Length: 169
Image 1 (cartoon, rainbow, N blue to C red):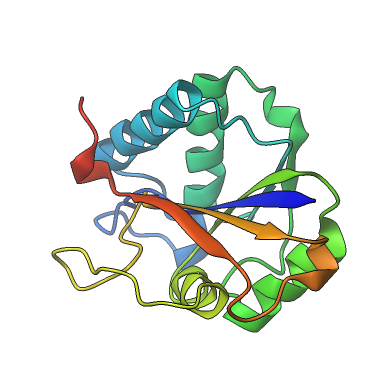
Image 2 (cartoon, rainbow, N blue to C red):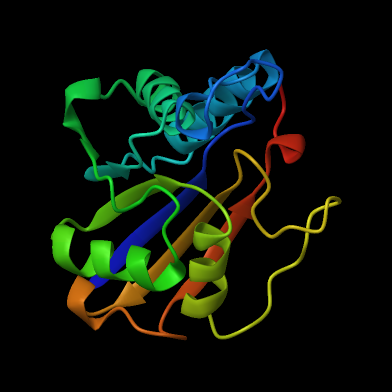
């Protein structure tokens, strides 16, 4: 069976506010980008069956804005503290133990998300202008055969990688 994994890095956060990392909110630009990604997912008919999200404020806000564009009730978001500041291996374990749906959206942070993307696909990924595979609000759409427990290094195919600067307003 083909499964789909949507990896979404949280949208741009606001470093100007005096808050700890976990509580940092989104910037206006980040809110706009999260809405754009949500609209893109809607237009591509990529409504996730499940959403796993870091409980940090910026990922929470990103998830809520994406859900609004997809007409998904926010109560369906599953917050997992293991996603915050997680390594690629930790994210892989979350996916293997928490997933049983066909299409899953994982909303988290770098460097873990970017490392997971690189680990799952058997080829290199083009970098954005800032030298990252997944700049803020970037979304990678992957597919793989088998079950979530079969998710291993090099098993996935990158279908598309979108970045906010590639999306129309």
